[in-house]
Length: 451
Image (cartoon, rainbow, N blue to C red; front, side, top):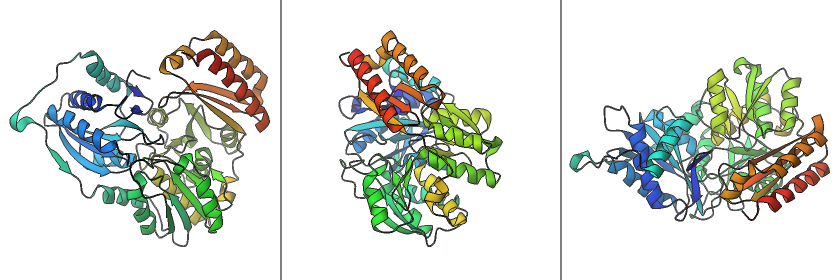
């Protein structure tokens, strides 16, 4: 992780950690770095989610971009993957999404995409950080007609919906689904998308008020959706996060289908249709142990990367793989997208359900999920750094790995987007994973909690 950028952009509490001043400086630096060698005035597209602070940060970022001579096309409220798609479609030089994804409303973030729709590589993020923090490059201050201009894309949502619809090989008629928009960006696109695809759609949590994004709804609070699906005898439920780049599901029995299980279902479908390049699926170190067992049983190659869909995509591009994702629901269908896309994922999964004429519970049975316990510890930035050199914690983790052996595993890592250290334990027994996770978490809290 860099000094500003984490695994998914710059993130923090809006107006205290992520201030207007910082957003403006990031805009100035990003325009300088990404317009290097550009023979014309650079163009940026900017989208945002529904947080109260998003318009404030959008305005500050726009001011920063325009102040160094970049033009801005404002997309309004739009999902993150729409920015990645439209930056290419609108022939812009870069795209920016203002969102803190699944985080509470007080947080916000800045994600930057290059002109080809990919998240920025570490090298470019580091150059932006150097300009913002170290003032290593003098910035332009154009005047008169050289100052950047602002325009508005009124059809951004419709253009994105059309793109996702075009990925569907057939309609979803007679499928009955519930869609939880998390009071976020999907609120402006989900209803139209799935209704136009022919499904009977029950829309939940699509009334954002600036502070209710992800609040007891969406992919991080899926219980309400599960109850709704069962109570209304629906085929399945779809849950998005605040910026709709991830998707989790509920089967007709009310059981959660996480990103790993979605990947298992879709990987088999892609393999069957000859669309799984090199027979491989890319996941992360947090991918459930049951998924790697599933791959072994079905003749698939499983590749694990660091946590973050950007790292999944980097591996996919490097080795020319076509499919990958994360347990959290960031799924990348590289034939259609350059980043995780919740609504695209849901569309592909629902088309598979329709094609197979099988309930989601039956499709999900291809993978056995190992019991998994995750403990999130709130730790300061200093504590997260100290984690890497604490010998007592290192010794404890090594001891636990030996105890678990081949029937389980432990992954302990600082979050790249939140002030947390995550302790994840998998094994054959839920009780055992809970005991071990608590044991390790208590030691970390004792060692790092006061730092």
